Amino acid sequence: MIEKVKDILIFLGGGCLFYIIYVVANKLKNPGLAAIFSLLPISLICCYFISENKILSNYFLSLMLVYMISILVCLLGFLVVKKTKISGIYFVSLMIIFWLILQLLLYYGITHKLKLK
Figure 1: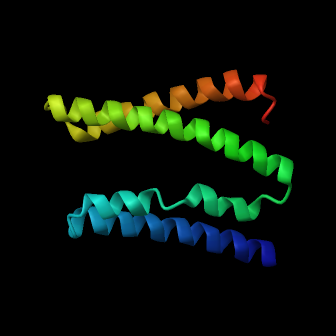
Figure 2 (figure 1 turned 120 degrees about the vertical axis):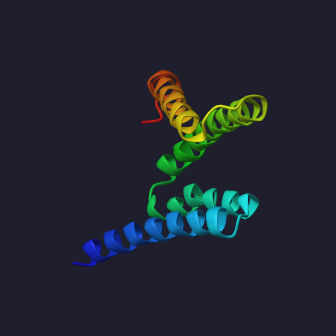
Figure 3 (figure 1 turned 60 degrees about the vertical axis):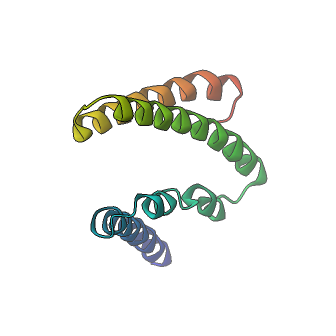
């Protein structure tokens, strides 16, 4: 029973965070604050749920690699949006697909070679 309550609380916490980001970005028109909320160190908070040090160590290394790809995709997105008049919703969808492809390449390439599974 406690596990189910924990799962529900984690799920609701994620939904609340998405709502806060939506309100801050669209209603308050504050993209800087929305970016802070969206990168609220969820990935670090998740460390509370990892109990073994070896897994935690590998998690941190994997996290750094994921962040590097995310920064690359964000930089590319910034440059394209700044220089073109591409529709935001289509471009964001393409960027998410591009990010997913890069993450899969990372996972099946580097992660397996380093035995970080």
